[in-house]
Amino acid sequence: MGVSTSSPEKGISVVTVDFPPVNALPVRGWFELADAVRAAGEDPGVRCVVLRAEGRGFNAGVDIKELQRDTGHGALIGANRGCAEAFAAVYECEVPVVAAVHGFCLGGGIGLVGNADAIVASEDAVFGLPELDRGALGAATHLARLVPPHLLRVLYYTSRTATAAELRDHGSVWRVVPGGELRAAALELAREIAAKDGRLIRLAKAAINGIDPVDVRRSYRFEQGFTFEAALAGVASRVRDTFGKEAPR
Image (cartoon, rainbow, N blue to C red; front, side, top):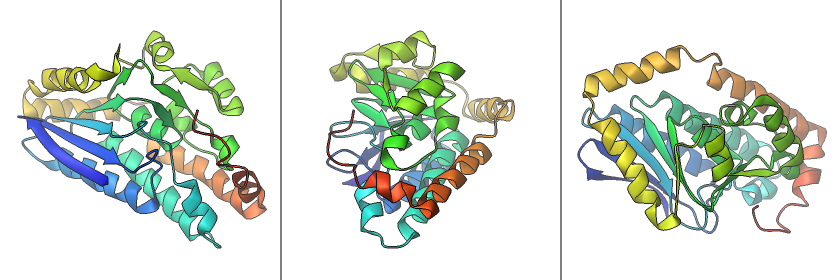
């Protein structure tokens, strides 16, 4: 349980997240994930990182129960900072990051895959931001990297999800494969990337990040200010109290 790193092939590092039952990460989990991704990217022998998860789904966002147990704002501040660091670690990783997504990819999961360099998904994968149903805001910055602007707004306002096939049609998912083939498909793409010159692939990652039209770290932190405003206004806790009555969508 937690975050682990393995090296199945030369030049490839696999970071695996495992927080049962649904990979809703506690505050410490987000920081552990950030540290693992950054360490993998800093390893001179690594040319590509695969980010994957065990269990029922890729990521269900933050641990809402941890927020509910906190009588103050410490858990919320920790989650805000932890998510920001984990998302930034994926984006700023010195080498390309391939996200291997299965099952549900919700909330913070969108922050991770939206900042990844490529996404390979299983046929059962669904992507969405149920933030408004959980008393929060945020990660629209990252969903905007996956779908067109008007679809982003509909998904955000309604908390609906999009399938892996739909995101492939929008060009944001590289491949959609049967669940049993997900790991192999992600490694296949990572292997192709890792075959490039190590120094050159790092320069390529830095160059592509440098021409992005949106500063994803700054944009996301701006969004998080509204999450904290909702908490101070009391609306966040009121909405969160209704959470947990249904399984992740």
